[in-house]
Length: 424
Ligand SMILES: *Cc1c(COP(=O)(O)O)cnc(C)c1O
Image 1 (tube, rainbow, N blue to C red):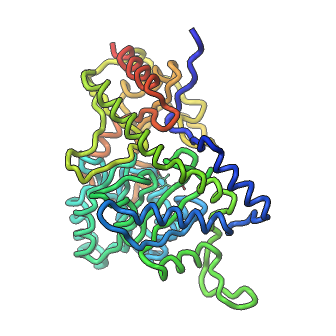
Image 2 (tube, rainbow, N blue to C red):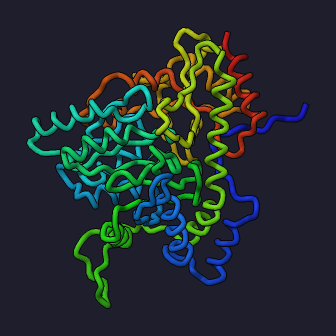
Image 3 (cartoon, rainbow, N blue to C red):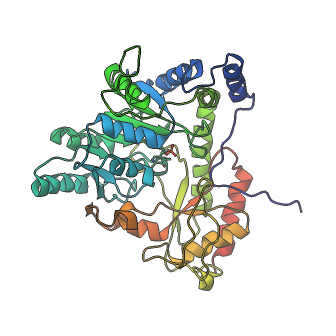
C-alpha cells in the first residue's frame, strides 16, 4: 500500500497554468516591486467586478487592496470613527482578527453570542446589547461587526434592519466568506464596509493580504489615505492624521490576480466537498454536519466544513485526552506560540473531540477545534458580553474538517471512514 499523504485543513492552491507566477514576473520585469502598481490596480478591478456582480443587480462598490484582512478590519473601524473610549459590537464566535483592531484603537469590544442556525451573531441579542449599552453608557456603539464564520452567511437582512434603525454602521467581516452570497448578493457588500482576507489558508491567497470593500469612492479614498501613512498633497510629507503602512504589495497582488482565475473553481470545489461530507456522514450517529439553513437565500462558500460530536459518543484514546501539554502548534499559520504550563484551560473542547483530533492526526488528517469564543478568552475577560450559551456549547462539541481544492472525493471517503473507525 502506498503511503497516504497528509490531508490539511485548507491549503493554498495555485492555478494550473501558472497565472500567479506570470503576474509576479511582470512585476519584477517592470520593477514594480513596491506596495502599489499595475497588479494592485488590476487586482482591485478584478475584485470589484466579482463583488459587484450579484445575481439580481450590479452594485457600484469600491475595493482597496491591503496588506492583511486584519488591516482591513482596523481601517474600516477607523473610518467609522472608532476611537478611545468607544464601544464596538462584535460577534464573539470568531477568529481574534475581528476584535483585536477594536482594542488597537483604544475602544472596547462588546461581544455578542451566536444563533444556532448559522453560528453567527444573534440579531435579537445584538439589539438587546445595543439597547443595554445605550442605557448603561448613554452612547451608541460606534459599529457592528458580524462574522461569516467558516463562510456561512450571517442573517444579514435582520442585522441590517436593526443597524439601520439605530443608525450604526456595519463592518462585515467576510474574511472567511469570500464568494458566499445572501439572496444572490456577495457578502461584504451589504454593510458600510466589507472585509476580505487572502491569507494563505483562505478561499484564495496572495500569500498574505486583504481588502476592504467600500460604499463609494470617497470612503475608498479615505481608507487608501490611511493605508499609506496619511500623507497630504504637498511636495514634502505633511501629516494631519496618524496613518498606517497597510497597502498591498504589487508582488502579492500579482498572486491575487492569478488566484482570481481559479476563484470560481475553488468555490465549486468547497461546496462539492461539503455536500459529500453531508452525504457520507448522514448515517453516522452522533456526528452532525454544520449545514446552511434551508432558506434558499443562503449560499455559503464552505471555506471550512464544520461538524459537531455528541458528548455521549466515545472515541478511541479518549481516556488520554488532555493528559499531555502540547509541544507544537495545533493548526494555524506557522508562527511563535507560547509554551504553556497546563494541558487544559477552564473552557475547552470536550474530551471526545480532542481525542478525535488526535486520532485523525495519527491517520494523517488535520482536524481542528472551532474558534474559541472571544468572550471566553482570558485577554477579553473584562469586556462586556451578551451571551446565550450557543457559541460556548458549540466550542465544546465542534470541529473543522479538511476542505479546499486539494481534498479529493477519495480523501473525503477516507476521512469519513476514519471518523467511523474512531468511534468506539
Ligand atoms: C482570517 C480572518 C481575518 C483576517 O485575517 P488576516 O490573516 O489578517 O488576513 C479576519 N477575520 C476572520 C474571521 C478571519 O478568519
